[in-house]
Length: 462
Image 1 (cartoon, rainbow, N blue to C red):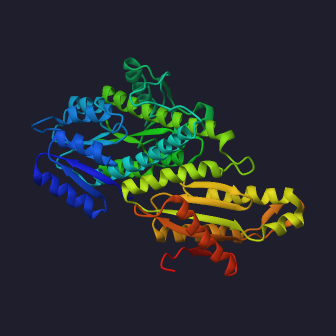
Image 2 (image 1 turned 120 degrees about the vertical axis):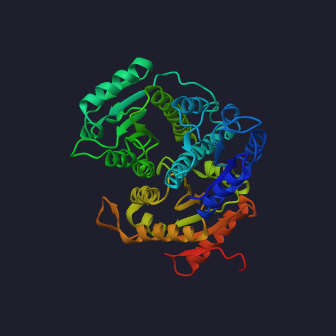
Image 3 (image 1 turned 90 degrees about the vertical axis):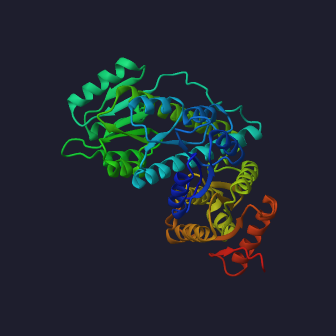
């Protein structure tokens, strides 16, 4: 996972060491040597993550973080504070200023990279939601879903999954005494897994060491992969100093972690932060879903239609120009679709189109744009995608369409369907979106004329 990281530290040696570690992991790194420079650079470059030293001569890290989080332009950028301070009060102060986490000096590489991966993954998903929300506003379909600093109008809900019943009672008592959360206790792994979708909380707090028959990390993995709990925030409680388990939990999908035993006030601040982010994401997601359902969704397949695709492609292209990252654009056309309609009627054709859309969605990422342009022609745009990744993805789509017959009521054995695909790459120096669509269309024409059921990548030299 690539990303742009800003390192802020007044000591050059610290910046050089951090930069070497991150650059070796293929992150793009910039540097600032004081708080004022950090604020200016963050506003100008909009990095994906900021590593911020606490102790600096001109402006301490707390003040810098607070300014970043109150500026609408930079409020969404995750901040990790890097410090030699170990007191709980120091962590609380940073978290209350909006910091996403603390890394202590000397820096533990395992903890650093696990937290960086985790925060970047979450930010990229929120960026995509914000981008889609912006598209609906540009189409005149809705007002903004949220404003930075906007508070929720409902208390957060929390489900506690402790290591044992006594710990659960202690957690509930200490958190309930100091917060307005609606706290419930699930005394074992199965109780947490079996919650109905309507009973899903904003946050699960899960101990990594459950009873001898259960595993907190396994529960984290299950919750993150299950559709009904995929969007829920998760705070993992791990034994003091167990960075390896904390890193594993973050990679499995935990949103945050805290060491056990924990200070109740620190847990409350972390819960408030996770609930706030979760509720913002929920509002963005609901806004996009509700406003687009009728206006810009194709009623047969549930995919975005041409109107939305054209608008959103401009957003993806603009972001590519800002970040310097490539994106892939595909045009897909079902082979000999007229024969399907002529043979099995329009009802059979509609069944094939709906199933075709479902297979595409199941084999692409959530951040990818999938739309039906009309008839049997579909468009896919994949942000942050290289040529090699585009080849793999397009071949995967071609394969899943070809290998399994499409079911129709009137045809017991199903219908064999294939697809032709044209692919082109957009970059920060690429032509405009209209030209990219033309390039993908040329590549699609080559796939059709060369025998169908194939993928062709646009060759600019040709």
